[in-house]
Image 1: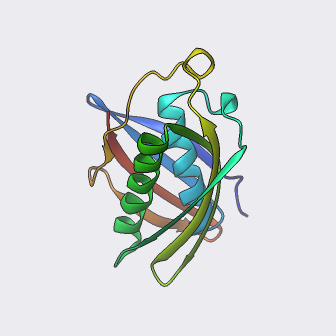
Image 2: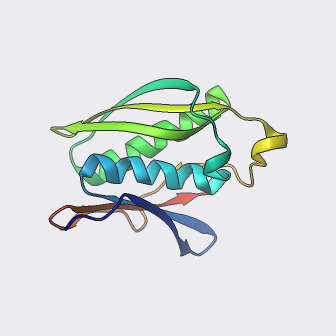
Length: 141
């Protein structure tokens, strides 16, 4: 029996862990991206009005996760945007995605931290059971 997609944070010293889970690997990566944005602001306050295409390639799922999250962090910093909706496809360690979001509005989004990068700390991508994938790592804030 599969569970609904979900994201959460987990404690890790001065940094923050992000975890995404869902029925597929791609959904787990999408949910990890939601957790990433939720480190910065309330996810519900970010309108999904502008689309940005992203692509990553890595030799394994774990490195693909950090590349994916770091690509999002880069886009957030250079475009001054926050993202709230993600569509990911993964095939042969190649990720293609669209992230939807909007420019940062400090008065509405109240960003609390700036994420410096996704790390290899607590890095894991696993199929926990049939229909349940989880992807996690610690992000440096």
